[in-house]
Image 1 (cartoon, rainbow, N blue to C red):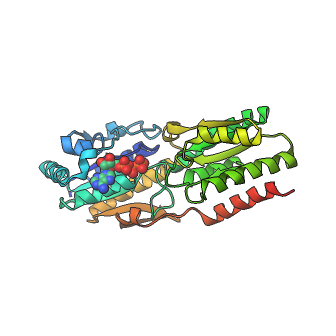
Image 2: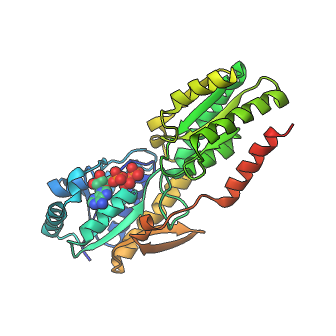
Length: 332
Ligand code: ATP
């Protein structure tokens, strides 16, 4: 093998640069030429790339975002696009393409694999952690820290004013960030897609819980962590409804894209470095149509389709204790 390529696709995640660095340096270690496509799959279609050398990845490990830039690419869904991408890869003599992204990017990888003879390898890079087959995705740990830091700050003002705050975190299909940030910040309540019941029941639950908290603790702060898109009319509407129903002032805080940015924490840098190096070694071994990941400190690879066809569950023990802690607060 002489030449490999990589790209970053979908939502950016802290640690993508650390992963790019590991791929480039490991590639150079094995005397490979490494090409970086820019702007996700768009770069593949437009043949927009650069040759990556060690100087390109110097001093990037601590930077959020991705030096290759990321993007969504609507055109990539068609067969024509996948064929064009295959033609472009062949024209450059690329033998393996490494894709750092989320489940959507991996679907794109499999789509390409139908039309390209080269090896396709996915590396899980998304803050959502919603990819089966790995304990954590690159960027996930940093996103929890970012959410946690914000919730701690919100708690200060919530405490000072004895208010209810609803903190909206990312993860419209998966509650990994929400559950972990809620546990780590000792939030009073958490609302996640995996655990959500009917909206009316959910509302009654929170109201009963706030009322019980008032009786037990007196006027005090109350924090609810909620994932985006869970409440039909949005978290601002939920705050209004709760204010009306409880008589306690309730404020929404939407964390939004700050969760995607920032310098990666050490766990993301180490994970990204391991997965980047391992993906290059898998390419050299001739593996194809796989995703690399880490479970219980063991590196592994699995069919790339498993990453979205199988569902990753929340840690059931964390769910259980979150519920227990929540119930204790309601006791008279
Ligand atoms: P994140 O969840 O962090 O935003 P992601 O990789 O899941 O990351 P998506 O926007 O779902 O992000 O996908 C990224 C890109 O992958 C899409 O813009 C598209 O170019 C490509 N892609 C997604 N699904 C498919 C598919 N079924 N066929 C071909 N290409 C796809």
